[in-house]
Length: 240
Ligand code: BV8
Ligand code: ZN
Image (cartoon, rainbow, N blue to C red; front, side, top):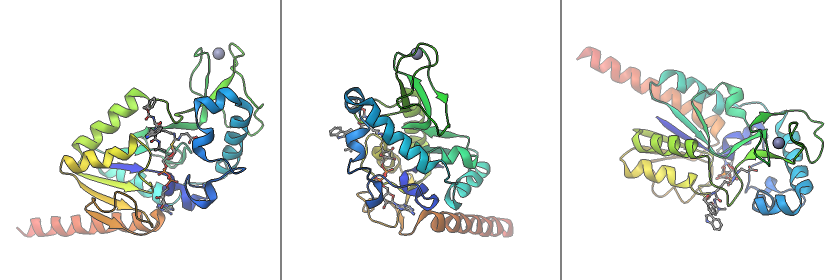
């Protein structure tokens, strides 16, 4: 089983999505600020944006969709959760076999490469923060537009998409590459692909099943139906 999540899985936790109306900050779009160019040009502005998002995300708690994915992970031999989100809510909910394709907003790394991936959840960040070792600018440990994704994460994600029998695609507009190609890889390899999203996306026409509902409602019910079906199948098998 493989699951791909996007910003929509955190919507019911109060985290603004990227392309929804609540996703703007001072009239900037994510694509304007989440880039190496924007950071080079104005690291302070980019850090103010990340600080604003950290302030928004900090109080948010995992919702029923995050918790259902933790329970599913414990019930499947082979389960990979691939997320495009940087909010850290899957990890907070207890997901372990987690591929963070686009990094994590709570982690930082040194722009001179001397230190990577330290966690800093303080809400009194100096803006812009500096590397504690060499004093160079620190940057959020996330993948910006125009940057390559971490090779290992990418490998794990495409391997999971390539061998899963079922893939759930939850809360993504399926616009951002290469993440948006993962469901297509799963479909090509014959997996049963389910989209959970209250709105249509470019995947809706090609997946096997569409659940047009918010994730925190749809996922717990989809999982209960799966268990009930499994028990029925097991019951049938037992009866021979
Ligand atoms: C790369 C981290 C190789 C940062 C993010 C043309 C020009 C330039 C570039 C490109 C191009 N075409 C393709 C590209 C490449 C580019 C790209 O895809 N651009 C897009 C915009 C076209 N991709 C890249 O640059 C990637 N790197 O390709 O490397 C390379 C190397 C060098 C040079 C060139 C290429 C890197 C992409 C990673 C970007 N980083 N985040 C940060 O967060 O600060 S992406 C960002 O978007 C988030 O990670 C987010 O998760 C992700 C995807 O968005 P979604 O998750 O889908 O969120 P969205 O708001 O869009 O949709 C929410 C959905 O939820 C909606 O469908 C909604 O209906 C639904 N929903 C709402 N409520 C609910 C719900 N669903 C369920 N329940 C609900 N309650
Ligand atoms: Zn450093």
